[in-house]
Image (tube, rainbow, N blue to C red):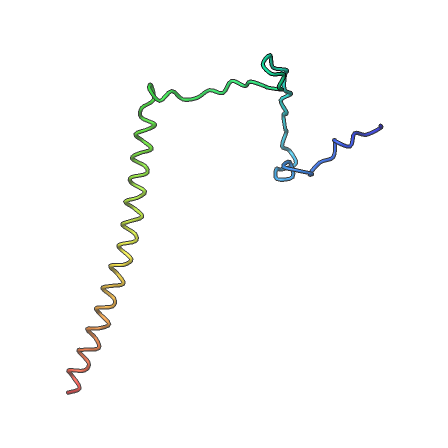
Length: 99
């Protein structure tokens, strides 16, 4: 064959990326257990025993975010209650002046 049918582009996930994206495919190697195709990749992971500040920083960020959302929600509700009381007060005051 002059051209491989597998060299076509934009058939799957690669259509979601820009034209300058480069893809690397890791070829699997035969495993000694069970004859399955397996590829092992070393990925560095942060050790939380030595980086306790990441865990506590996350806790603080989530707590502050929750407090901010509650503050905004209750602030909006409080403004609505105050506005409703002002409207009620205007209606009663006008009625007394007319009598």
